[in-house]
Each structure stands twice: as structure tokens, then as C-alpha cells.
Image (cartoon, rainbow, N blue to C red; front, side):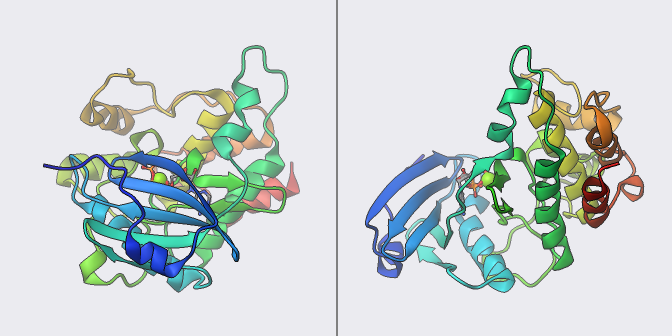
Length: 276
Ligand SMILES: Nc1ncnc2c1ncn2[C@@H]1O[C@H](COP(=O)(O)OP(=O)(O)OP(=O)(O)O)[C@@H](O)[C@H]1O
Ligand SMILES: [Mg+2]
């Protein structure tokens, strides 16, 4: 029998930090996320356990913890608990891309998405790519925008460096609404895929598009099975990109079916900062 959580914070998390206050952010699909305030600042704690359909969700927090420590060790710890693994990482204050752009999706919206905000999302992706890692799960909820910068969170599925075997598991695609045709094809044919920087660029394009318009990159019914969704993505074409200006042109290029035709994340930053 699997338990659907949430569980209390494991003792090993409480041994690592002492909460002054805590708030459960979400509990779903084998993962509970907490925002924890301590005397030293704010942290996110992610606690994983096996979900009804997947065993890997139990390992995801430790896998992410090992990656975060390789990228920027400050404030990151991880470990095991009775039902899986956990991590602690710095809390990023801000609004997700999806929430920030809600006004553009509202009935009768007149304002257009800010290319500067899109640039800060692209910069977060490009900064990760510069380290040699692909994210593998870019989506509008994983881009947290503040006045100073955008944080790209949830590195549990990232690919590009060493992962301890005990915490590793194979990549079975990402949230289908952001999945590139080549990843969908591979998952349909073999059950797994390998995250790439080009697939991240596609996912960034699909994230900017849905946040600006409310539309998925490819049209499929809400109740379509995962398999049918992936088949629609492979078959294409993606929806026409009705976002104006340089941002719209870039999203169109990011959604190119051929990975080699997509701009690199650093090129997207360059285009958006030159603003033509
Ligand atoms: N470091 C962080 N700073 C701020 N918010 C965070 C942080 N980590 C997680 N969150 C919040 O918790 C939510 C879920 O986190 P995350 O995506 O990392 O977990 P998950 O278990 O993969 O959840 P999901 O199944 O939704 O992908 C995020 O969308 C965000 O709102
Ligand atoms: Mg997530």
C-alpha cells in the first residue's frame, strides 16, 4: 500500500535546521514541499516518498540535492528517511512565470508580455547550460521571478554530471505540456529519453507560450491519455505562435521540431537583450 502523504517533516530534516515557522507548500505525486523559516533565513525542504504509480519520486530529492551541491553547495543538504529521501535548499522568493503573466491571459488583456521578464527566464536556463547540465523539466512553475533575477528550480531530473547510483533513476520524460517532439518520440518508443539543452529550449518556448496565451504548444484534448498527448506532439505541428514582436519570433524558433534548428539558450538571451 502506498501512502499519499503528507508526512511530518522527518527527524533528519529537523536535525539539520530548526524551524521558527513552517508552511506546507504542496503535497502531490510522491513529494511534499515545505517553506521553512529559521533564524538563518528561509529554506525549501522537499520530502520524497513512493507515489501510487512511481517509485522514483522517493529518490528525487536526494538526486536533486547531489546536483544542487555540485552547482552551488551553499545551504544545500540531503539525506534519507524512512520512506525515501529529502533535501533542503535556499528558498527563492518571487512569482512563477505562470502567475506573473496571468494578466496577459485574462479576458480582454491589453498588455503584452515583458521581454525583460522572458530574458531573465532565458538567463536562468543559459546559466545552467553554461555549467554543462540540461534541466529536463522546465515548466512555468519552475521559473521563479523576482526583481533581481529568475531562479530555475527543481533540478531533480537534470542530466550532465555524476549522480550516485543509489539515488539515480532513468528519465521518463517531463510534463507533457512542455515536452519536445524528440523526447516524446523516445519515451513512446523506448519508455525513456535523455534530457538535452535543445529540449530545454523547446520547453522554455512552450513555457513562455502557455504563460503568455494560456495555450499548450500542441492542441490535444484535456482528457487525452499521456500516450495520445505524446503522439500529438510527435505528429505536430505546434500551434501558431500568436505572440507579437521579437518574443513571438523567438518562441517560434524555440518550438522548431528539429532540435538543431532551435536557438541555444545563450543566443535567446542575446536576441532578447538586443530587443530587435
Ligand atoms: N527553492 C525553492 N524556492 C521557492 N519555491 C520553491 C522552491 N522549491 C520548491 N518551491 C515551490 O514548491 C513547488 C514544488 O516544487 P518542485 O517543483 O521542486 O517539487 P516537485 O516535487 O517536483 O513538485 P511537482 O510535482 O509539482 O513538480 C514549486 O512550484 C514552488 O512553488
Ligand atoms: Mg516540480
